[in-house]
Length: 328
Length: 151
Image (tube, rainbow over all chains, first blue to last red; front, top):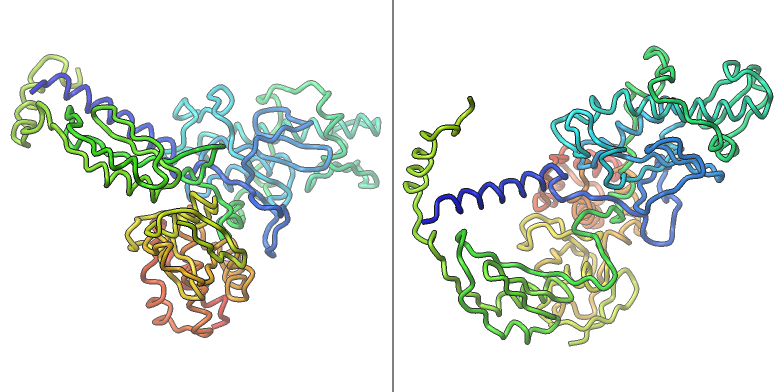
């Protein structure tokens, strides 16, 4: 038995599965509005989760996109897995940006550690119950930067001191409330102003919070009750095929035989043999699975075919006695 | 082999082996991904659709057994009174967490309310026992079914 190779293989595979878990168990990648309707058919909050990347006329940082039409999109750096993070992070942004949760749509961030890393975990990954703590300050600052710029744009247009203006529910008001401009109306002008450093903006006093601390409704519910929510398994690319895979039941094993009958199954396009695994590629999963059965793969278990628990324990024991096996 | 399936009121032509599970026809051939793959063995309920109003596990429903039957999926269940009431209740009571099983939950609940408009706890438990939820939303599912039924 080839001890070092087995160990490396286990290490590699553990790393892979750990990454998969950190990326959200591979379950929930995003959501989309499919079908023609973009209007809610429910008496529900008009918050949305959208799939396609949103660009915005006003995009002062990685988290806020506002268009002249008034669409406010909040970009979610962490993955929603049912833990409610889209809602919690939206609340942090919306509190300081001064928009209601019924005025926004949310969208998953693209992969970008520089913009979206979790400050506790140092990469853009979701886990360890860290999302709200990690983004507590940065998302509030991002929202406050947006609010300040929109207020500044309105004050400039009215030729007044920005500190006399305030924002509420996506609208900037002058001191008396006699003048107001919506965020959509201000998007173009605000986009031309220099963006202040995030740490320089003043955050709301927690006693003034109107959203944080409330029992807000989830922003991702409506697409999950009518089949529109897209999970990882729902991803579809043009011309995409699916595959059913069989992997050697023993590490280091290899394919011995594959029955060509797999190719005769209706819908099967290709049988891919990479020695330690076989993939049957087909038009749909029903054909792929049927093809894999027809492939009737036999395996050569290789050098690890007879490894027992006792062998593994013995090997670990030997390794544990070597220098560097444990913490210094 | 070619089949004409009546799905959500619209005929769809598909050319697959007759033993292909309806689930894969819906998801992979027709691109209707609201119906979910969970276990592939009729143990979890995620793939539930209606066949002539009755809840069936589409992962174990061969396409050649469907015949002229009317198939309804989560994408269209809201067009019926039970589905619409349930979706509304689901939102009002905030049932959903990850949401993966909820298509199947709502399909099973809609079939229940069609046959039993005022279900008891026992009716609900019996009708919903085949739908599992890893988030553990069972208490809210039961409450939402009652809410939709007005009991």
